[in-house]
Amino acid sequence: MATTLITGGTVVTSTGRSAADVLIDGERIVAVLEPGSMLLGSDLASAADTVIDASGKYVIPGGIDPHTHMELPFGGTAASDTFETGTRAAAWGGTTTIIDFAVQTYGQQVMDGLAAWHDKARGNCAIDYAFHQIIGDVNADSLQAMDGLVAEGVSSFKLFMAYPGVFYSDDAQVLRAMQKSAETGMLTMMHAENGPAIDVLVEQLLAQGKTDPYYHGIARVWQLEEEATHRAIMLANVTGAPLYVVHVSAKQAVAQLAEARDNGQNVFGETCPQYLYLSLEEQLGAPGFEGAKWVCSTPLRARAEGHQENLWQSLRTNDLQLVSTDHCPFCMKGQKDLGLGDFSKIPNGIGGVEHRLNLLYQGVVDGQISLERWVELTSTTPARMFGLYGKKGVIQPGADADIVIYDTNGHTSIGFEKTHHMNMDYSAWEGFEIDGHVDTVLSRGKVIIDDNQYLGAKGDGQFVKRSLSQYLI
Ligand code: URP
Ligand code: ZN
Ligand code: ZN
Image 1: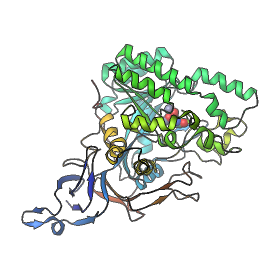
Image 2: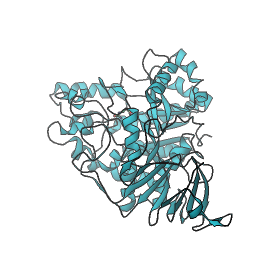
Image 3: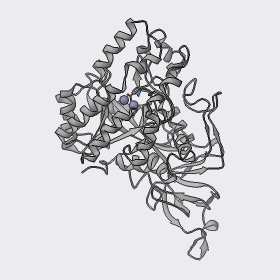
Image 4: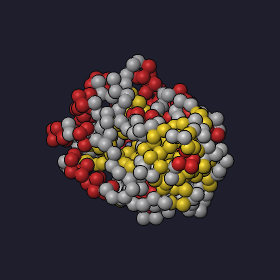
């Protein structure tokens, strides 16, 4: 098999950094060595088939985005990135694995939903991919089918306390599914917002003529995120289910998670770049219909209330454990504009799979998180949390050679023109400037991004079966 040596760089892991060379044989890392090491009497640089010079740059494990929605049918349309376009965009941004959500819709068999997701992804991905399972209809059949998910490599499922009439589960359904989670070891992922209460507020706002995108954020008040988070924690406590709350945006919801963790409960939370950087006032409150670009649930929160700073702090203190994108892109034209004159009809979701590593690196530059925590939040903890660790999330012998060479002297301008590769007619991150650049990306030993060129191909990415979370007790 062909060997590759990455030489001269600084290898950064979740626990430290050191000057080291990385030797790859085929798809795997075979050695992490002192710079300039010899092998069987010859220096590695002359023995390797390919040498990549990473001098002055960071060598980090490829990003793992554990929350994406490619081609998700939602809000009367479907997320605009296919597995082909979305995974290619992810590769551009240094993400080498996504975990997407297979969907069981109401009335559908769980395994049929999973099979449909395999059909969408198979042969189309630029990078490796895995699945969680959305359980959109908790009933006797689906509870029984869930027994088979772990053997399929799907070791987590998502429930929704929001979106009545679509994916919503009531408390009785949540309790039963969590009992299954406790029994099988599957992680329960929760969209924690009180959907029925939100729907009343939506109806009342619309009746008052408050139809702009801004009111999406007013209807989905933080109290209804905090309340649902608390309820999810209590139901998990009753059942003994391990709980992971997705897209946390309210500081009060974080406080609920932190209290439960302090009390010894096995609960976790993720946030997303949009909740760290963007706000109700600036983005959702943009003039006219512009705010539709940032309609997502949970919603962007008021900067005046301090949510964003609190989320950064929670990432430092491990009250939140990782950062995903919740990539769920829709174009303005023909998709977001379904909600002109009625914010409740704007498809919910923001695209960002390409920008997570860069946006989080900016947090390192800004002094919000350390370099090692950057790697931990974007790769190592996602791998541990979702049963990929060892194969993914780490630079060590035996691991897949999913590697990013990151240049801190480089620059990434997300810009106002279309500079990204996602299948969207705008970017939620227009105007953002990043003091760093993804130079080279290897996916299982193959260079797929180098020198601002895409060198991969549709079908490079393989389905990865996941084990149970490392955080089970
Ligand atoms: O607005 C969002 N988050 N859309 C995607 C679906 C979900 O709830 O994660
Ligand atoms: Zn959700
Ligand atoms: Zn989501």
